[in-house]
Length: 197
Image (cartoon, rainbow, N blue to C red; front, side, top):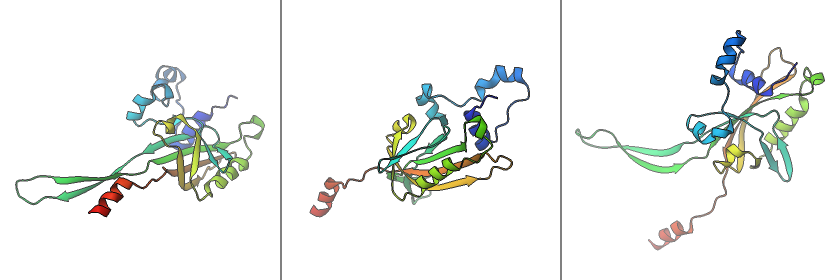
């Protein structure tokens, strides 16, 4: 039996169910296939998700997440809106404060790829991810072209969900929430302006 990890991840995280009509699926499957990295700039505008390997490093130890997890992200700005006075004016004055960190979400499934071990709980993969999550420091992104497009080279892990897999003893679904972490450099120009005034 052929084993498709991409289909497994899609089923686990998005309640995907294969079609009942093979002929119809052959003609329409391109509408349901997740986007590839070939058209990444166009797909990013559409909020696409991507299957791809992702690895992190910490103190020369490498943590490669198993089975090509799904990666998605979001970015927000902090804008202060101030109401204006007057009966003839509609709207508010907007003041840009800052752009927040990227919110990164990684959704994957731990499963043994060997056909003989697919019914065995993937404890080694689960232990590795849990060990990585318990690091209370930033992790460096080793290889990931999607995150590199946004210059995300390190992240801090915020939460992890180990979700139930009823009736699937050989699978363990997980969702990791993280934020991007950039080096912070004090702005000396701004400091000098404040001292002089």
